[in-house]
Image 1 (cartoon, rainbow over the protein chains, first blue to last red):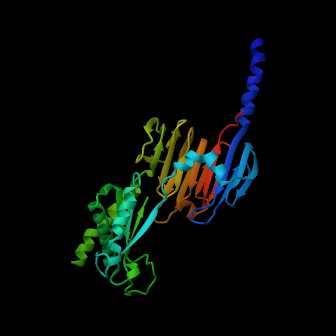
Image 2: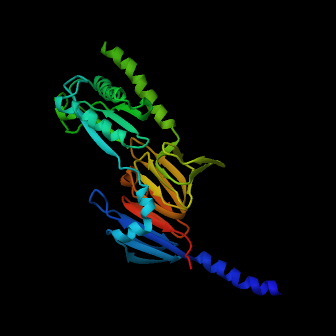
Length: 197
Length: 150
């Protein structure tokens, strides 16, 4: 009997403890200037967050209350998680002379800048995608675009980037930066995109 | 000569495509601090920088821990101390950008910058907590979940 008296409040605390929560959901302003939206749904009770620092609290499952956070509050509540965020992916574009895997003059210097960006990232992944303009046959351009991508890879390997960190692909003339009719020479389409993350 | 070049390079392109599709990796750990682990089919692995993350993994941190992961669709996901994050599902087609990304934060704190999946389709990314389901409409957001403290 003495045991039961002792257990009853404990059981009650456990029950309440399960139902009562400290949940917080915050929408951040996008770094690109656009703020998206987040729908918080707790057992059918919904709250849509669509302005910077709009927030929702869930104290009990099935009830959501809207609130507003701020830059300072967010740092206090989520500091370590925000500090652990990986660097944002970044893309570079290199341009080529017609029908070759030779860099256009202004692109040659960019290789060192790309190397520096890769060097400061932990466990970097580099995706290189080659493109051509629409001069020449589709199949020929597939091969040319891959050769351009491989040329970029070789330059990065020369600077010391491990080959296993780099993937290459050629997209031929399929994804022009500037749409043109077939057989039109267009320097802006003779490019390689190097994305680093 | 040209046709020979094509004959040589085309199988290379195809082989690369197959290798990429066969990869099980959902993402890679880019930042790691303090005590942090990955639980994968009953085994515990250190959540160190460069370690791959797969569908089905559960990433956990201790009181001094944090982990940041970049997923294949360029989603950035990081957790703070005393956190448990399960990667329930990760499917991403790098050509069409279609697929699904479902994750559950069982406890702790989470920061997300959504990637190509959420951009391609508003229903592609879902984050669950014990109290709520989040629909992600291409966005950056924060989550804290856990029982109330007295």
